[in-house]
Amino acid sequence: MLAVKLHKDKKPWLGKGSYLIPIVSWELDRIRIKSWLHILDADTKRGWVPKTKARYRYPIRYITLVKIPDDHPVCLYLSWLERQLLGREMEFKPLRDIPKERKEELLKSNPWGPSHYEPEIILGAPLPESCIIWTKDIRLLFEGDKRSKLKERYREENG
Image: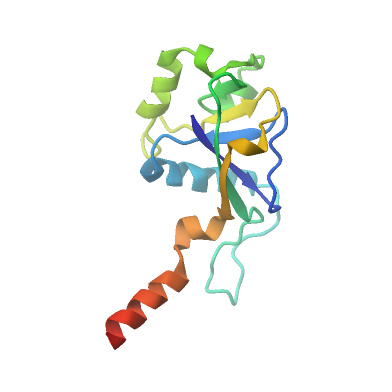
């Protein structure tokens, strides 16, 4: 299963108890990631900053894509409310032992509808560095690579 880690430093912490966001499809999960950024940023006093084109600044600067092996112990929640309010105990199981119905609920969840979830995966053991696929600046996810867009526009104008 693919998942992302949102973090402040260049190197992510992927130890026991680390929180990850499961990835099902980038179209839907971009919205979930943005929602998680707002949830994680709620405690900081940052907000709309004048003189910066009113762009919201997140203290979280990096996103890391990881591949979780099937034998890795994890705990899958469909919402942080499920864990916080219902007081469910964390049961770490290998990813392959999580019921298929539970995984399919991730596919059915709609980030715009009444069944709006912020799903999370909690690691039961440290994830090896070999599972990291890439780490990027979070702005690339929402703003794109401006340099490549400028190069394309330059080529179009100058032939």
